[in-house]
Length: 189
Image 1 (cartoon, one colour):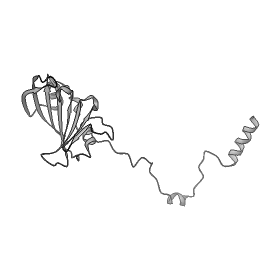
Image 2 (cartoon, helix red, strand yellow; image 1 turned 120 degrees about the vertical axis):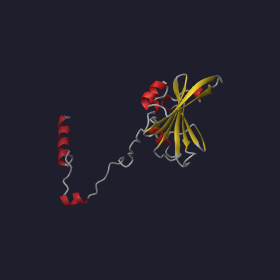
Image 3 (cartoon, one colour; image 1 turned 180 degrees about the horizontal axis):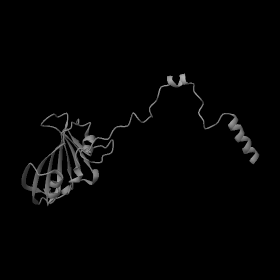
Image 4 (tube, one colour; image 1 turned 135 degrees about the vertical axis):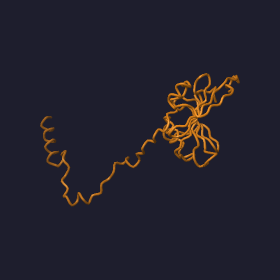
């Protein structure tokens, strides 16, 4: 048995099976085109996170102010919680940040509905996933909305949020995305 393996090993070496590549003359090396790896053309740079929407979700007014600065405007009113239809007070703060505008609705002391209006341009509906990623959400390629209408796309269960909505820019350019909104829990929809 050992003799057979030895003979096969010698035969493999003599027939040209080795770890070394055959030598190519320098002229042929220069003429051969350099090919990129198969998936190099498919690599797309991840979009830059313009705003960490999850960083302020369910945070207090003080925590959000520490992250975004003082609000530029504030509104108050009553919100109807669902499905109980109980009225509860809310505070809505508007913030200006380098990458756009943010609206945070506080109910029971927490930021539960947040809208991010990016300065960057995202095409509607083609760039919905890019816009959500730019808002700091983890969205898989090819994610499909749970529901849609001519001016919005609704996604559920992204990063533990009850709902994520991508909305057309109806006041500016309807071919673009106007904002990305998250709702943390069903009762705040």
